[in-house]
Image (cartoon, rainbow, N blue to C red):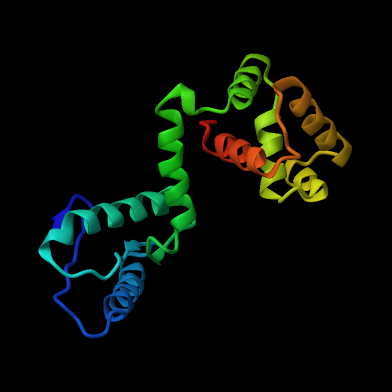
Length: 181
């Protein structure tokens, strides 16, 4: 079945559960060679039963959506391959659906960045992505490490962020990560 530029292929029951994935990889390689540009392919979790089709279609569409958001993506991906991004999108939708779900300090931080042109969100994102390594975060931001340290301390002071508490740090990281740029 084809919908727009998306082609859905259903496999009958197979003994080798990896066969559809291998076939999809081969098809993607052949299509890329023929078309001359990258092709995105999503392979769903192997399930049986007509009642599973709507969930499998949503899974494939979600994987394609994640892939299409990455400029260098091509080839075959499964939900397992892009699990982190899928989960972050779902959590982000939940967090942003209700202001009560937003971390109060993060809300103030985002408002401050927007109103004053500061880069606290960007700095904390780089710091968290570097798993707390100031040097790596500074390199990613093209800043001096002391500037990154200063911004992190200021963010803690100005917005009441508690980056010395693991649970708070996780929630802050998640809230900042899923916040719209």
